[in-house]
Length: 463
Ligand code: ADP
Image 1 (tube, rainbow, N blue to C red):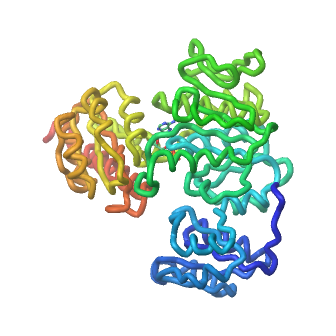
Image 2 (cartoon, rainbow, N blue to C red; image 1 turned 135 degrees about the vertical axis):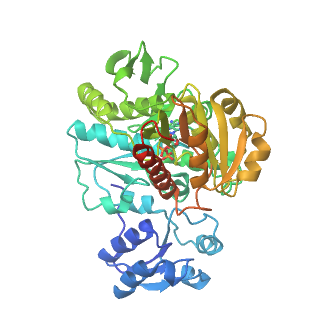
Image 3 (cartoon, protein in one colour; image 1 turned 90 degrees about the horizontal axis):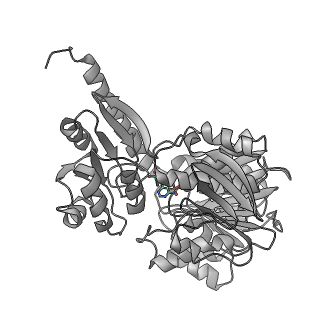
């Protein structure tokens, strides 16, 4: 735990009433703070949260942010979706009012050891796998952050013995001050969220804040195969690496299908590749990272292997859905950026019918061309980004503007032959047609189920 802060009697403003904002408000109320809340959306969209908080004496401001509200606080905690440079936040900072993300606040109260996982892709998978391994190892592990429960909600359950594994995003890291994980994992750095950051460099700097407060007794676990990560290796913590390609001086690597951990010249076999139940080389990276962190956290090799073997994977991440008339369907709704889609395409030998599109996040889709040309038999475009994608992908693979996910699934199924695969890996956010990527993934799976039922109901030999 960091130097805890006294919330009793302090004026705390929570910005944004999503799950994290609500959890933060509850936490501060329970510690005697004078809580206010400010939210851009109108009453109708946040009615339940607003009603609960008002009943507990919180001043709730809806439908916009008032600068005066922000300037009247001792502490402001914006939710992860709130832009860093929201004008009233900048104004508050200029007055010296601390603006902390919820993980900064949580870290000041969490007891025990803290493990934080970040990167452009693979955070949720690695966080979930690491938590799963630690539990297999009998360690008192808590898992949260962007995945599952907000970090602030884990404080009550934490104790000096717990290991808290948090998935943290660049948005949360931006507004940290003393956040200091004992073990910090940086999985990869590829362009993402360029609609929110001015440049890749600015985005990478936000991620690198993960290490800003680490000291000599702490560990950094870094991807040696990613040059953008490697060139940002921090100096203060003890550096450990993971690599699919090379034997590392310290950390986890692969040799002859075996995962080893190497430290001070000593090598320990942790698991074999055959034990990895997840598809795709990118998941081998996630496994190496989680295995390295688990070993550093004190899990024995046997438990690491058992944890890897029994890991069920995470919904919407290259998730197998079903086989209908020999056509396999995979849901990778969480592939909301180009790198994740490249990894998904590479996880299959070919014969792919790929559903792409949604809400554009400001990236460039042309890097998909070569892999689509190699692996895809056809592409179905949906959503608001379809025209931009069509312009950038024209000629790489046959393209069809399907408009909706429903139509894309039916068209892809009609086109696919037995032994081929339909893959939803949109490379875009979902907010143009869906509530979020989970909703998009669930709709996709439902559409596949309908095909399955229709196929099961068809008379053998008929039609
Ligand atoms: P995050 O929490 O960082 O978004 P997820 O585990 O939810 O990461 O995976 C997001 C997307 O990226 C999914 O499409 C998944 O298949 C893909 N992915 C997972 N791990 C990696 C990785 N190490 N490198 C690139 N893509 C990955």
